[in-house]
Structures are given as C-alpha cells and as structure tokens.
Image (cartoon, rainbow, N blue to C red; front, side):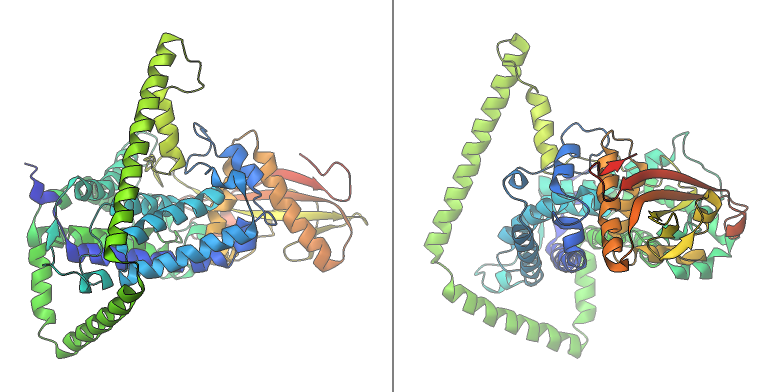
Length: 526
C-alpha cells in the first residue's frame, strides 16, 4: 500500500542530484560549444526560420519542444553565446550549491532556450534532463553539501516529503513503465535475436562493442531481462531501506553498460544520477558510518566544508542585505501568483467564450494550456525509444558533387565516384563497427541526421537544403572546385540475425534525398 514514506527523499540524495546535474550541464555546454556556429547560429545548418516554421505546438512531425518567443526578437550569435556562458556559470553554481533554488530555475530557463534554438539535435536524454530539472526547482537541493548549507542557522533537514518529491520519483518510473509498455505491443519484436542485432548497429554503438558481439547466446536474453526489469520498476517506490537500494543496483549496472557500449549521449548518466533519489536515509546513514572510519575521507570532507564556509561568508558580505533579498523574493512570489490568477481567469473566459460562440479564438482553454506546456518543454513523450520500431538498419549520408567537367566527387573524402547506386553505397565513411566515428564531432550529429533522413514533414526540403548548401559551399571554397550540383544520398544497410557480423552480406539500398543547385538563381530543387 502506498504511503508518504515511499516518496520521502533523503537530502543527501538531492545533493547528489544537484552536483550531478551541475556537472552534466557544464559538460553539455562545453560539448555543444564545439559546434556553436554550426548548430546554434544563423551561419550554420539550422537558421531559426526553419525552427520557427516546423517546431510549433500541435506539430505531429516534431514534438520534443516548441519555439520560445525570445527568438522571435533576436537570433543574434552574441545573444545565444551569452546564454551558453550563463548556462555554464549556472552549472557551476549548482555544483557548489550557491543560491541553489535560483540556480535551478535559471538552469531550467537556459536549458529550455538552448534546446528550443535547435530541436533537431535533441534526444530522450534532453527530455529526461529537462523534466527532472523542472521538478528539482521545488525540492531543497541545497540542504546538504552546499555553500547554502554552511550559511544556514538552523538544523539540516534529513529528508523531504512532498508532492514534488513524489513527482520526480514517478517521473523516473513513468519512463521505465512507458518504455516497457511499448515493448509489449504487437509491433515490437520479442525475438531473442533483437538485442544481438541492436549491438550490431554500428552508428549507435562504440568500437568496444566488438568484444561482446560474438557472444550471441549471452546477448540474447538481455532484451527480455531489461524489459522485465522495467516492468518491476514500481518496486523502487514500494520497497524500503536496503531492499530498495539493492534493487537499484541492476538498474545502475544496466545504465553503466549502456554508457560503455551505446552512443546515446548523456541519457545513462542522467538516469544513474536520478536513481540515487531512491537511496533512503538508513542506507545513507550506513554509508556515513563506514565513511567516518576513513580518516582521509574525513579530512577531505572537513577541508571542503571549511572552504565552502569561507567562500560563503565572502559571498554573503557582498550580497544585498537579507531584508532586501527577502523583499525581492516576496515581490517575485506575488508577481507569480498574480500572473497565475490572470492566466487562469483568461483561460476560463476563452474556454467559456469558445463554447458559447462569443469568442472566436484559434484554440480553446485546454489547447492553450497544452500549448504552454509544449513551449516550456514539459510535455511527457511517448517513451517509445527502441520500442515502437526496431531499428534493424545502419545508415549514413553521402554528399556527391557533379563538377563542371561532368565528374562526380564525394565532397567528404574528395574521392571521385561513379554516378551509380553501387558506387555510392561503397562510400561508407568507416569500416565495420567504427561507423559511429562519423559522429565523433558531436554525438548530436546522429540525431540531426535522423531528422534529415526520417522526417515526413512537408518542409523537409528546407532542412535538407540548408544542410547540403552549407557543406557544398564549404567544400567549393576549400577545394577550389567548380560544381553544378550537389546531391545528398542516404545509404541503408539492412541488419538481420544472420548478417549482423557479416556486413558484406547486408542488403544495401541507396536513396537520393535532395539536390542542391550551385551558382544558379534557383538555389535548390528536389
């Protein structure tokens, strides 16, 4: 039977969440920064005009997020760069736990802005991080192991129990149960060969997967075991103490294996950090008792605490007076309440007016609420990753330019090719399990390529045009070669249980996705 104790979270778990999320945010900003111009400015492959056209509420093709009004005012590279820097600083504030609640709110805002600028590169990792970050706003993340804690003149709270603690725990379980549900549907293969085939998808696995790929009999039960583990995930909520901690171990190990073998970005790390929320007070107390027996750990803890206290005092000395801060906080809270009341009233009026026919608005109250949730990136996705459509294929893009001399050149390798499907299919950028290296510039490349290849949007030509245009113009400049057109092909290799390790026997197809005209008034055609 469910009781409130089931959703009680130890504040040390919240401290782990805060520090982990701070580190992930800083690392993510640094990784995204390597492709700042390419993915986040008007000079890259995703001008904001394309984002604003495709990522709108109720869009059935794209739904990871929606556009934010701020980008209708400016898409300046300087502004976006400022957001990146501010997000990195916010990540540092989360790590040290200074003004934690404010830092969490700012982190959520900055992450929302960055994600909304280019939704083509987002994955489920971004969705999970976004949602968990939102629930964290309402939790005392700075109660332990923080600068805030060293400046607080009251007893430290050992744990917290609230609607918000329940929601953040349920968020994790929703992800597991949602994915398990989709894997039980008729369109999902329950064949034992499923996981072995998945480990042979070179574009989403790391090279080290080859060390386990040959042990097919050991790989076969993995998919069923993982599905079963997700189905019993509610026990993470209903078990208590050591039993709950023991159950988190197979989940932690599973995500560590994902991180080591599958190229899925920050997803396993985010979930690993979030799983610490299920570690309860008795377990933390036992860990503390053992840690206190190690003098080196104690000295390290005392040193960090002493430094945090000193830094906190210096920061406090330059802050506005406590009375002023309290006044500002009250004013912000009052403003939020007023906005909430006005918004709720307007939604009720619009809904009633629509029903009565006295107000002719595009969306009713319910739709407007959903639109607001979509813009904030707080909708719950289907959680159907690797479930609704088993990915039995490898694929990669090939850009071929036709020069003024009538020759065909692979603009990525500068090698001459024949204008045939067989020749283009032989342009695989990396051999065997190293295909993932095509995305070594950024793991987000894979999600961007999926957006280019898989979309059924009527505006997909605009997305492809920007990609081909950017690379063809860069190639023309660096190679000093005059070309008439650049064609984009997708090469798909079908993977089966029989050919998973014999890539030469895979059925390979080549499809032309787009053609960009160079040096003509009509920039593109398909």
